[in-house]
Image 1 (tube, rainbow, N blue to C red):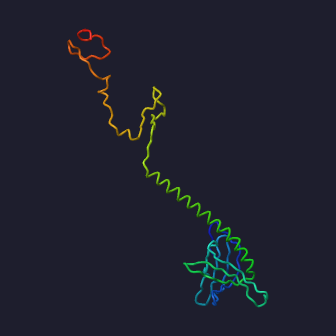
Image 2: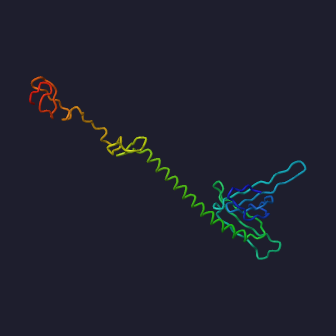
Image 3: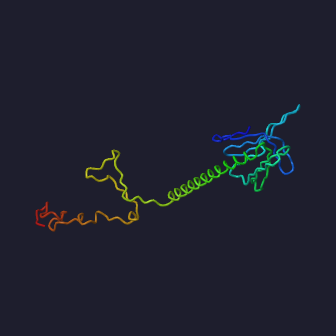
Length: 214
């Protein structure tokens, strides 16, 4: 018996003889699942050794190219065939299976082939979308990032007493411009008393050292 996948279910099975061209292959069992069409050759026993069953054909339903049933008008002493065509390693393979009711197999296979092809198209589309999203995310990660007006707060997450963030970090082209020296600002310019040379400020009206009117 074949090994099925976790979400794979067996639909039909029947003992059959596989015919390839004019050569008959050893009898086996044909299995139809909701995902695959499988033919397993029967094992053989002898006095000296035993040969286990072997999978001779394992085809995904969406890979089947053509399925047809041959049911002769006179069924007495006449074989009824199910013909299956599929591509393997770039070559078209054609197998005939001797079954009791090939038309039933044909109808069931065709029904599940349509379902399998639809699921494959959905899976291919989903994988393509996921790949596109990964490429977009990778492109974004490689591109330069600009964080304008990003505020950093203290551990408490609160603002300072003035209601402003503790630190403001702006990452843009202006950060590379030269900064003005606070010492050169008008409010930092020093004035000297004409009489004693003491340092004065613009707000002073009299020298605090000698008392001369400024």
